[in-house]
Length: 319
Image (cartoon, rainbow, N blue to C red; front, side):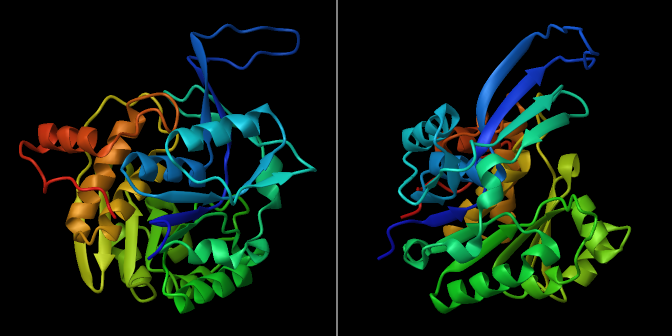
């Protein structure tokens, strides 16, 4: 019997969201904005919080600073029942911070990686990941750490643990083709539309899927306002997005991932998993902060029912 539904490995930091900032102040200037709010940030952290709110037992494996921001992240995790025993405390760096400016439009960021820069898969306690029935990975950096991810995913497979990964944006511009090798080792592989086009060199989603499905048996592509598509063992399923008023897209992709993995872990079909994923993503963008809009199961069920006009299967927490 596993102790956790999922172990999440990756980044956790603070997001300072600056709303309504129409201009960046010049030297010696001061600009006033309608609001600033403080939230837990980092893709792995937001994914964890969303899954915990949906009723899953989660443990987080990452690094935080010995500072007030690190204490804040831990307290928020504990508030939603996330086990923090595997989080290490850095003696070298402070907890990371990301300042999101004007999230209502084209967001700009000022970021300090902090303790997240210390993360290494090779330093993980394998007993901790073996305690979960599923492991979600973030932090892939192409050729910089590809071999580490290959080794880790193979170890997890040997332990009988299912895996998922969201590789995220490649800010180096490398778009390392070794990612196709990694796809063969991961059970659920997440990308967004632009990432898929950069990795495959294709200009349409249809062409991207033709390339990606040669390497992955379960690929999920996030298409933003157009919805999402999943290709599982040769069968492709599309779900359109839910129309909502967008306030902040921070963490929307991570909330989407959480909804999909909830469905995956509860044995739901790709179509049902996409429904949960799109619902979680839509609810996330309706509030400022990557975690504020994510919901519990009952709220998600109600949201989906109101949007599509009928209820989905009865909601049950994964056990």
